[in-house]
Structures are given as C-alpha cells and as structure tokens.
Image (cartoon, rainbow, N blue to C red; front, side, top):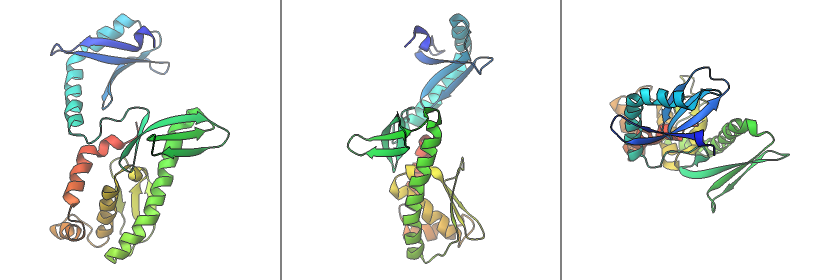
Length: 239
C-alpha cells in the first residue's frame, strides 16, 4: 500500500479520521464521498498530496456531520456495514472471492461463509453478482409465491424481477407482482413479509387500516419486519 493510500485528518471536533485516497483518471476535480464504509477522497491522478489534504481539511465540518450520521445508523444495524468484499445472502454475511476461470459458476460455502465467483472477466464482477442475485431471487420466488398465494387464497398474474432502487416489491392492477432482484439478500422472514404484503395489495390497493389488519391476521410480527427493513434495508444494497 502506497503512503498516499490514506490521509489522516483532524476534524472540527478534534477527532482524527483516516480518509481513503482514490486516484482516478476520469476525475478532473476532487470530490469527497462519505458512506456506510467510511470516508474517501477521489482526485485526479496527478493531484499533489498537499492540495488533497487541504481540500479534505477545508471540508472537515461537512465530513464530521456525515460521519456522525452514518455512525448513528451503524450503531442501530444488525450487521456491521458491508465492506467491498462482503455480500448478504438470506440474511447472512459472506465474504466474496473472484477467480478467473474458463467457465462461469458460483460456489457457496456455509462452513467458510464465503461465496466464490468463477468469472471469465474480472471487469464484469458486479454484473456477475447482479446475475447471481437474480438467479437466487427467482428460486426463492418460484418456491414461496405459489405457497403463500395458495395459503392466502389469492391469485396473481406474472411474477417479475426488477432493479428498483427504493422498493422491495410492488404490484399492478393487472395482478402482476414485481420484486427487487436483491430480495434473496434478506432474511427469510423478511422475504415472507414482503411477498405477503404485495399479495394483499392485490386485494387492497392502499395502506388502509383494513390492509394492515389483513397482514397482521396472517403475519402477527409484520411490524418487526418493517422496523428491520427501515434500519437495515439500505445496507444490503450493492455499492
């Protein structure tokens, strides 16, 4: 690791913070990113280290505000924040490993808590993760939707898998169900809640008191699931 990979700065509350330095040929100017995994500064390749340090220091009040926000969120998390080499599947955290291979396939090890992606091209790693999630979510939906639909005596149309940014599920007036491709990242009880939620929307197209009464009758712990999603939902998204 080069000496410039990290910059230590003193924030306005006198605390110190290690900021990751990322040099990018695509960036023409410096920018700062604060998220669940920490703080980083992205700069042009030839930017001198002193001007980068000054830029970070100049923005340290904003950085402090954002780091406090994410620290507060992280303290409420069931998981610690996902790192770049980590992934969530069915509510469990796994390490990711990518291996260049002639054929593309994935190996999941429960003992090692590791998912190994065999890929033809390492540059397509994110696409491989997305495709894998879609496959796992399809398996989950193919199994659970018919069972829950039959249990609730609710008929439905097509079941689709999408890439919604803010929704885990939705439905149409034609009776079709739509689910986020990351659904399989969630714990099984949360998945059940989301599917039941959307199935009942085929009866009640709103969030009326009657809608929630229907949910509670068959899924008494639904409020716990809603709380879990509010606290943790954003943290199982792909970076």
